[in-house]
Amino acid sequence: MNNIELLSDNIRDRLRYIEFSLLYKGEISRSDIMSKFNVKEATATRDIKSYSDLSNNKNCFFDSKTKKNRIKETFQQLYNLTDEEALFWLKQETYPNQSSFITYRFKRLSLPEQKALAPITTAIMNKLVVQIKYLSLNQGRETIRKIIPHSIMDDGLRTYIRAYDRVRENFITFSTSRIIESECLPEYQIEPIETQDKDTEWNEFIDLIIIPHPKLLHKNIIEYEYKMIRGELKCTVRKAVAGYFLFAWSVDCSTGDIYLDHQTHHLYLKNIEQLKNIESIKKLAPKKTFL
Image 1 (tube, one colour):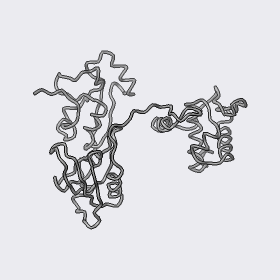
Image 2 (cartoon, rainbow, N blue to C red; image 1 turned 90 degrees about the vertical axis):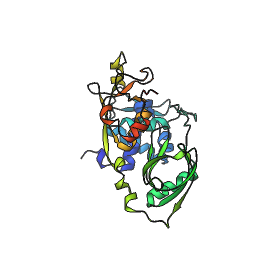
Image 3 (spheres, rainbow, N blue to C red; image 1 turned 120 degrees about the horizontal axis):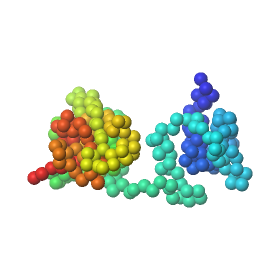
């Protein structure tokens, strides 16, 4: 067991943030740690010293002019920061002495109402029936439904819930932004067929084999961008969300030799023939169709 593993989880989290800051911002200050983790100055001072000691003083040095610790040319990572972890922290960083974020974020056009979403999350946690007032796009009107939600999913653009719908007597996916009202119904019992373990499409996983669009001239650039291996990227997703995933990433799922515009769809689903009858892919996956 190394010295890092002997540290508490809270200290390790702060040391990982120190390393992130050095790597992505070139510096770290006590005030950064204090504001990020709500700790006192003495704690922040000890954290920076601990990190420096663990790196044998090779990763940072104290700049007396700026009163900050800066990255050294001899820097070597102590932690294996994941890409998701680094991006998560980067999105929260602001410019020095400013309130504006380093990462410019697109505004989300569709957000659920808190008063409508809160009872649903409560129902998921406590296994309750929920009554919702829902705007159905198919029917073009407001509908009242009793549902048993079991999961929330988010594709980066919209938030959805997966639930058993007693009107349709099946598991379906609802857009949370179309829910007007919701109310937990603790007096109602959940039937065995309405539980998550009976949601076959949610529990089953499939592999999406994604490749550069066949019409692209410089496929090697897309291979590099998406970290493809031998020209392919395998994404394992739940069968119920496959269509949402492909739609969010603009993956062309056309069949035959007819394709969508490769200038706007840089990716193509290689194994579309094997997956084209999956419900979510039939409904949502981008593809060329003719009237």
